[in-house]
Image 1 (cartoon, rainbow, N blue to C red):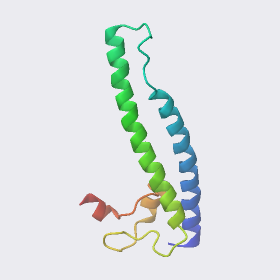
Image 2 (cartoon, one colour):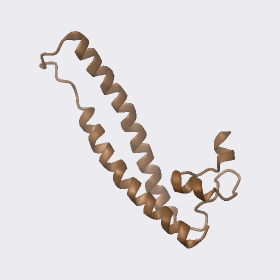
Image 3 (cartoon, rainbow, N blue to C red):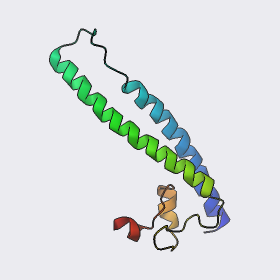
Length: 111
């Protein structure tokens, strides 16, 4: 991987981190406790609780992605960035542009 490709990936990571942080803030707002004082019907309350559970799962996923992106950003300058952690072969540049937090090549990720 050349310097220009790494620079493009780094810019992409920084943009994705900013986007993910904004998404996390929105999801945190949507996962606030549902007040029992709200005068909504039983079905509506059940629906709100279900939606809250879905939002909490999405929030966990986004936080995990944010951590992986920040880790990728710290590793981008190292010589082993872009190498599969399993087989040690280079990860395809297109994969790193699309999923910069990838630590495995497509073949190892499928296993």
